[in-house]
Length: 188
Length: 100
Image (cartoon, rainbow over all chains, first blue to last red; front, side, top):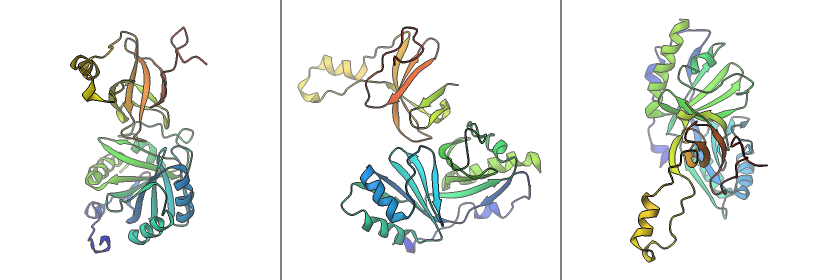
């Protein structure tokens, strides 16, 4: 069924008027399959093996292998992301592997859109709406967390020192994008 | 703004949290069997102390979990935070932290 749903990225139209600002560059990430997994430790191990990426046990960390990434969301909650894969097939494979376990698995692929913010001023731009200390000491590469940007909840992660990924629910996406773009205007 | 230590995510700005009222108030196991006064006590009566207060917070824009905080209602000093379900920790005599 989910394969029949027509999905349009909520940022598609905004991203077409993107400005070239090297110190803080905004871009839209392609759509990916996203599953939200919750479960007890036994199910977590099984899910990690089936997904191919172990669920990070340390708080606020993500681990990636190939195109697949597992983000820590809470003590028993992880976001599983798989670029370029069909979410229905991924869901079915995990669901089959987890048979007999107590767990919750929800396909949230259509819930959010993702933005990258890169460049030497990326952390400064994010701090326009986000209260976190984004220095490399307190927010190192490999860290992810849900936090707040302006009035919207975002999932913020840092795959490289000057690169941030922002995953935001699609109804908030244009708000977050426009607020970021306004902040980036300082360097235009 | 308060800096609230989430037991899972560490210290975060108050803006990421929502307040959940006084902690350690257990719902009566069988509400039908208790009298009205006990039910009123459970629903409405709170300790409202001037000093250290055990309260629930939820890391709404974060890990999403409820946890408890010991906060001084006069100075807003947060002495301890601990996961939901754990007993209230005893404070050291100076009130600045928990007893080890």
